[in-house]
Length: 602
Image 1 (cartoon, one colour):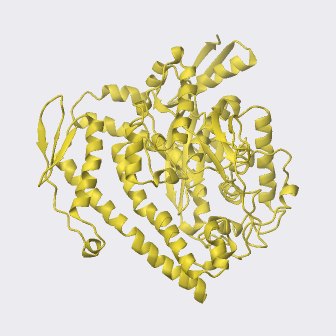
Image 2 (cartoon, one colour):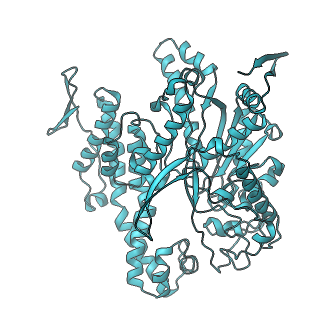
Image 3 (spheres, rainbow, N blue to C red):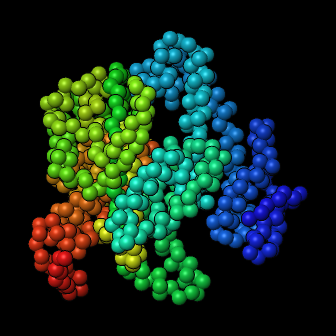
């Protein structure tokens, strides 16, 4: 598509048609304060052209005047928000710097967090202790501007830009692209003749850290991407639930296409037939193993707590309200500070389950080995290794040994490195497609997505997310809590997972049977898809049917989804594993009917 500037718009043409369309920019009212910050109509128009050009290339057609108007409004919002980043960041930095010098207790930023928690603000720790207010202000301005306000400004822009253009997040980073290539090779190897899946139809997510990039860098990376990865991923700055929510959005997209077909008076039967075949997960995972890094353990601040109140309302007795997740969980009802508390027993069991599962090779099917090269920092030599196991898992960890670890937050608290998720790197992916597509591509069907729910809780009680989201997802799926065979509840902190399970009456032998984030980490942007993979492979291995994955998202939300294992696939897998030959699958259909079938393994 060719473009050139004009006084009132620009011309877009395609070589195939040789036609040109002239677009008019709608008038946008720029606030006075935004004008003073340097926001101009030219900036908004440039942003609009950039996004419009990407969309036009994707659709292989010129965009309409109505689309231009809509994109201009979005661009104006993002450019204006972006202009706020530095002045607000500097203002916040000045307040925080004054706060640190005058010991003034600013309601949202309490300097003792910085002083006692270098794991929260490691780069600022020494500056605060030395009282270097000016240096502190400078670093904090960068921190506030490029962390919190990039989330609003640059992150918001990329959210709109990337979602509208539907660019692949994996093309933004060579490491992400390598992970995608590894997964693609793994999946292609399972198909007859090595047929590669249609990568333009699967949904994926990237964590917020991958998305907070300059828009020019995003465009440059996408421009260099190979065609098989372009337009393949749905990206967002949401992070904790990103892998799971991608599946939910992919399902929504399928239903939207069906509605469009009906509205256009096309024959919707092709869509209806495909939807009736059920949504399937072909080769959920395999993911790449999480690599453990060191965790921090320090602090002495006693968190404040909520007052009395029913857990069925917006308050929870004893749950912290500091706004820092680890501090809040230190004050949760199942973490009273005693080292022999229920979370100690649960954490020891979590480590043990993960170690046994790894020793028995239960993770092998869901992990795609990744060969990487790196420079040894000691010798300077280039080394190549193949990572095929989660290296954070440790054998021999018990509740007693965990009780010897120093608390990470309050001195008399119980949250520490042994009962909280590790600081890890990792990635996971899920292929989500129609049953007919999976069969055509020769992909192994692992299961089906049934329903998902995102439920809000008070932001300061973010750890309660699964407790609220799990019942809602089960309700949407039309099942009771006891109908679920396996629950994958994210172990961001043992207290969160244990508290939700106990409040919902879920037997602990149904929760994370192969361990969870305590043992092998919780990489942002990875856990949602990793849970799906772990759950479906375990349902397949054990011959069970229904599973639920859930997590707290942070900032006051929780998400949960219900999955059904592919029964035929599970049967044939078990026949192959045991060397047996004949099997039978059966079910009640409802309304007074039943169905059964006989299968013979190859």
